[in-house]
Every structure is written in structure tokens, then in C-alpha cells.
Length: 258
Ligand SMILES: [Zn+2]
Image (cartoon, rainbow, N blue to C red; front, side, top):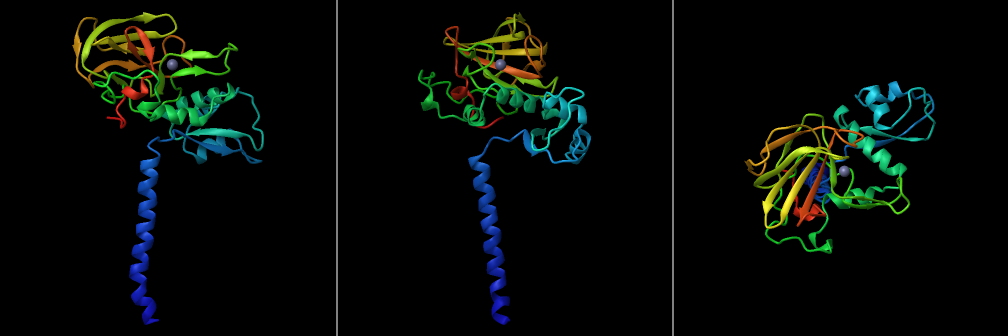
């Protein structure tokens, strides 16, 4: 008994240290915060009961899973549950990506890839220097998406970061606003020139906060998140252009957000 009492404290300390280390390593290994969780439908579930138990609105659960109004829930089918009502858009983007053969690993890789993986080396002076235009998770990476409408795949010239409507979009680097206008498909778009042939573009904006010709600082609000143009939900479509050609934005973005 006395032996146990003397041992209890070091054992508790060890257990605490173990869980603490698990937590820390998980936090380091997975910087991506999931904006949704998967849920397997069990018999007796209704959209309303699932929404209630996850503290989100039924309409957002329906929206996130692209479910028609009268759709019955199939037992054992997987629903994506947005973490909050504001994350419904990110879940929807994932649902649509899966329908078109998109995969989760692809999404994860786009969030924090190694700059070495990019075939065209980005300008060393700007690697990892860009501020994320909004805080969030990349729901659709840069590159060719397989499936979708065309058989050859669809080229996505930027990354999509879902965020609630009206969220401030920040300039990724200091620069001069080249243009503020509506572009076909891209909707309301801001383009910033950063010099040395480098530019960034922010699309599907709800509104603009700057005018063409003005100088902006990195992190300065330039527009707000919306879904103008061809967009299924509120997000920023962020492109990095080198000498007018879109390149993978990932190596340019700071590894942590803000
Ligand atoms: Zn996009």
C-alpha cells in the first residue's frame, strides 16, 4: 500500500507527460484543422436530429452535403458534418470534390507541401513570405483536377480557401493594386503587382476595399469574401502569377497562418 502511494505521483506525472506529448506531436504533425467530421448515418437518424446533436443548423447540414429537400437519409451513408455553421461551405466543397473523384490526401498536401516539390522553383526572395489572404483550410488545391466535366481534367489556376461571407481578404505581400474588376468566371477580382514579375489575384469577392493604382501593405484588407462569378460557396480563389502565368501558390505562402 505504501509502495503504491509513493509510486502514484510519478505514474500520474508519466501519464500526463505521455498525453501531453501525444497532443503536441499531433498538433505539429497535423497543422490542418478539419472543418468537418464524417458521420455514418444510423437507422432512425433524421437530418434534424443529426444537426441538433452537432449544434449546427439543419439547412447548413443539407447545404454542406448537397442534399435535395425531400431526400431520405440512407443508413450507413456518410455525411460530412461542418464543425460550425460557417464551415458548411468547406464541407460542401469537399463533398463535391469527392463526387468528382477528389481525394483527401490531395487536399492535405496542398496546404503544407514542401517547396522542393514544385518543379518550377519559386523566387527565393518570396518563398514562404506571403500572408494567407484569409485564415482557413485549402478546400481545392492548385493543379489539374481529375474528373469533373471534361475528361482531360480541369486546370485549377489557384487554391480555394473557404471563409464566411464578408470576411476580410488580406493582401499577401506589399504591392500596387493593378486592377479591381469583375472577370468572367472569377467574379469580382483584385490583382496586385508585387514587382519582379510577381502578382497575386483574389477572386469571387463580395466587395472591394481598395482602388486600382493604390499601394497596399501585406496583411491590409483589400476586399471581402463572397461567391461572385462561378463559385458554389463563399471562398477566396487565390492565384500567384509569375510573369503573367499562374503557378502553385503553396510554396509562397507562409507555413503558418497569420
Ligand atoms: Zn478556385
